[in-house]
Every structure is written in structure tokens, then in C-alpha cells.
Image 1: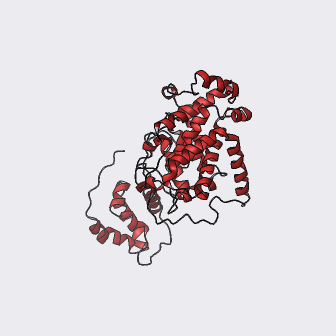
Image 2: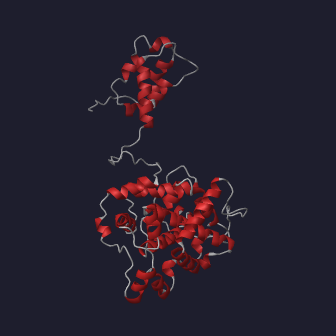
Image 3: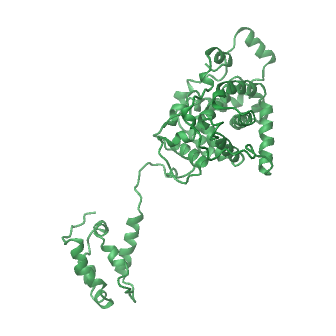
Length: 381
């Protein structure tokens, strides 16, 4: 729009002259619209910058017009539009506005629709066994996953190969949702910053802590906080992680549990349950939540501290692979009691308001930091 610039004096000169004449009384404003004619054609941005619209729409010395002039109404409406306009990011994704929480199913659908072929080439769907180990697994091991479920299994493992991409709006929404649900914040936060350490990442960039689990680790956290049945459990574990003695990095611990879930899936420890339910992703999600619950109960009742983390996780992995059905039943029973208000992970123990040292000042040992021979026997390297 080519608007012809209009020459006028300073804001104070205008107010001393024409605007005072406008606000002096009803009779001087409406008979000839002289003041309005003086700045007809001036761009609305110029009127905003010089405060003219405020002068037109604000009561002066208690004066109130008996009749509302259409020009004044139009100017006031345009002022309100200018005051509330938001910049157009031209992202091309109308549904992905900043501040919107994202559900697990929506995030999963995103990965189901994008091209992941380069990541899928990297996966090893099952653990390769040779010799006696292969024979023993064939005779006494769990059943193989049904053919119709293998594509869903491969999707889970492929997502675990994807890293965090700060340029992908969906990745950012997942992070923001996790942050808001755990902290109770209503506002967005920067994708890099010290606030992520408060959630239990080891640095200002969450991407650096996803080794071995990829974006699946964030999807698991999203599932935990966005499922109404597990949200309370997630919040209680998060509070436990801030205990002044038993503190631990919540998100890093979660990433390690996702690693356990990945390995259990690859070793076919979850195949029986997946075949029974005819689903893979819900089983993996529940297994992750059940394993996290068991760890939290073990951590609280046995007074574990961050120095115990490596060996606690190793024992947890052995138990989870050996008895996944038992863990899943424990989770179902716990959630049923929580829904009736009959169970609380923390009980009367006070874990909030911690004044002790933050977990970043201590050493956390995950499953990938254990001795190499232990990792080889666990199948994590």
C-alpha cells in the first residue's frame, strides 16, 4: 500500500494545537471534523507512534461525547488491532502455534508421517545370538514377535535413532510440553538454558543426554506426563528427584530407563505381551512406566542416593528383562489405587523445597557408564 507521507510538527505541538481543540468540547469536534481531516491519510503506524489515537480515544477532563463519531470508532478499532497484532512466522504449520501442548499420539503421528528411511537403516531389530546362546534362546527363550507387529517394533527402534532437532517445531513442542507439565509453568522457555538442569538434564542442551535412546526418550517422558493415569506418578517421582539427600537427575534417569526398554524389546522380552495385546508401542510405554515406578519405589524405600545409581540401574535392567509381566501388573495395581486416592509413591515423606546441593554437582552413573564387561553381558554395547 503506497501511503503518501504527511508533514506535521512534533507530538507536543500537535497536542498543544489541534488535539486540544478536538478535546475542548463536543461542538468543536463534530460539526466539521477539522481535526480528523488534518491527519486523514496518515498511516495508522504513524498515529500510533505519535500518540494521536490515545488522544482521540481517551477521556479528557471528564468530557464524554454524547454522540460517537464513526471516524473515532474506526480509529479506535484500528488502534486495538495494531496493539494486539502478532508477527506471522510463515512457518506453514498452522496447528503448531507456540504455547500449545502436544499429546503423545500427535507426536507419534508426526514420526509416522515423516521420512525416517535414513534412520531405519541403522536399527538392529533383534539381538544377534550365536552358538549355545542361540540354541538356548530358541528352546527356552520368549516367543518371536508376530510378523504383523514387526513394522511397529521397527518404528519404535527407528525413533530411538532420531536425535533432537531444534529446527523441527514438533520437537520443540514436545520439550515445551514436558517442561510445562513437570514444573507447572504456563509459559514457554528457551530450548537451551540452565532451566533444563532443573528438570534433570546434565546440561543446558537436552540433546546431549539422549545418547542410546534418541527421541524415544523424550516421547516416553511425554507419554508419562500427558497420560492422565501416569501424570501424578511422574510428578511424584520428579519431586523425589529433588530430595535434599536422595536427589537424582530425573530426565537422565528416564533416558536410562528408555534404554532398558529398547534393549528389552530387542531381546524379545516384551514379545509375549505384545503378541497378547497385538500392539507394540503401548506395551513399550507401559513397560517404561512400570520400570520407572519400580526404580522410584526402590530408591525411596531403600534410601538410595546418586552414588548408587549405576548399580541400581544394572539390577533394574536384569529384573525388568526377567519379569516384565510382574512389573506391568505392579504398575496396573498402583495406578488403580492412585485413581481411588489409596496410594502415593512418596507417602508422608517430604521431598519438595529442597535446599541441598543440586544433582549437577554430583556424579550420576547410568547404564552406559558401567564397566565395559558388565555392559557387554547386558547387551548395551
